[in-house]
Image (tube, rainbow, N blue to C red; front, side):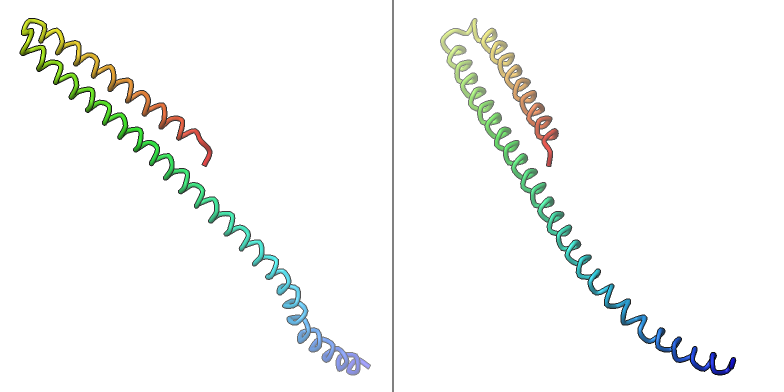
Length: 131
């Protein structure tokens, strides 16, 4: 009897071993499809987030560059006007030339300080924006 029992056990074990990978692979194929869908969704989100960050950063840098250009143009125009004024006063009123020169330098320094503060404020505002 023991031999019969052992003889019938061998085919059952063999059948189990043969069918196990087929059942397991059928379950993993469905899971693989779900995982692939999730991976694709995650990759699309990451790509979109990266594009948004790059766009926001480029916009901020462009805005910052435009502000700097406007400030420098303004400073140059004011300096040119002040130098012209100083030259005219030197020719027509040599005594007031030194006073005008000092007043103009103080005005230019104040303007540059104000522009620097404005740029720093803009950078701080850009840094606090969510990206």
